[in-house]
Length: 279
Ligand code: C2E
Ligand code: CA
Ligand code: CA
Ligand code: CA
Image (cartoon, rainbow, N blue to C red; front, side):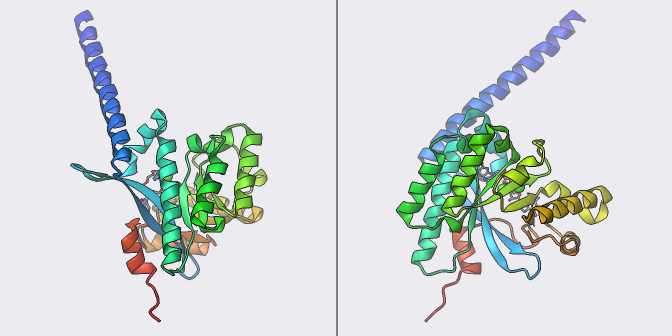
């Protein structure tokens, strides 16, 4: 039994070693990716539910890996969060989105706000707002072209810091969303106290919602709460007409999901949605 126990121990330990090695490799690779400019921004359309009007885009990072192709964020964002690299990725994404907005302005295209995901790690940096202000000024992009998606995690920091940071962002004109709403555990008081514009209903409550009474109850409750507080609601991960029909019936304000479009490269977004008018 002892030998077997050791065997199991050896098995787990080499597995852990393997994992640690993998994480280290990925961490080094990710630093290289940023230096070699291998990160890409894709943009997913957001629609108003009442009329299917385009209301904005969400910027989502991808890694254009020389061998592995286009790597989705799920396989490197969690690691980047634990290694601290996420703040650098978010700063890159914010600058990229602001550059994109400036370019669309120069080209005379229709401007719709771009939403960027901001990790707790970037949000907690004391120079975050000053840096963002500078980037907007440099590119002459108005704050209201930009939206930030934050999770409930940021509400778990120092409340005074969080509140004053959010207020400073609002003064810039930046719109604020709570992402993955319903999956955190920070309580609800912050919804009343923070200057939030939009609540994004987490995908896990949306998928097959028309077949699941518990999900229906949760979605209804979130929309009712948001309505009471004067906040907009956006449902994420809408894949079917049935899901959309349910959300419409409940008075959800907007949605995004594969039913309408996945996230696309900027040139594809331009071709499909931001065609310049020929004069
Ligand atoms: P998220 O912010 O909740 O973004 C929504 C995710 O759902 C995106 O996955 C999007 O492509 C995906 N999605 C959209 N519509 C559908 C649908 O109809 N069905 C399904 N199954 N999925 C859909 P993606 O791009 O893989 O991103 C995953 C997560 O990675 C994001 O979740 C976000 O938490 C994180 N992430 C992505 N880009 C960034 C970034 O620049 N900074 C930070 N901090 N996090 C990011
Ligand atoms: Ca998001
Ligand atoms: Ca989300
Ligand atoms: Ca999510």
